[in-house]
Image (tube, rainbow, N blue to C red; front, side, top):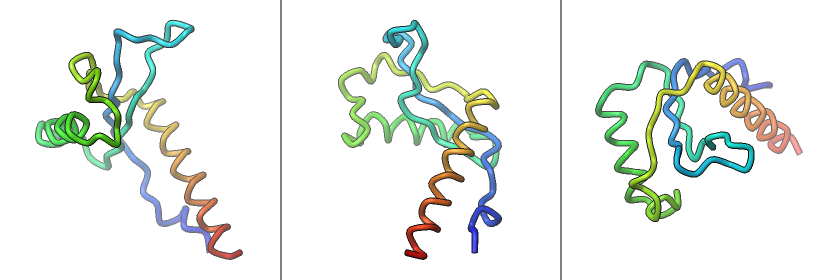
Amino acid sequence: MNNMENIEEFTHGIMAVNPNRPDEEGNIEILHFVGYWEEPNEDDIIGLWEELKENKEFGMQEHVNEIELRPAPMEIVEYYNSVVQIQDNEEDEESFN
């Protein structure tokens, strides 16, 4: 059975970016993305900011003052929806092996 049918796609997202450190092509890299099923509110944004600042797993402490949280455009939200679907399909395949 494929779990894709059970996954509700994100409708909104917040991305953490560092506009002061573009990649080699001049693009701003997405350092972290969080998808939401409803429009994020101020508490969501504050909670994400605190988590990025404090959790060493994200590796952003060194440049935390340069990081900005921005609403993700729909094309970015759709991209991450596809990533979640691919990961879910891979997990389904592993569970059958």
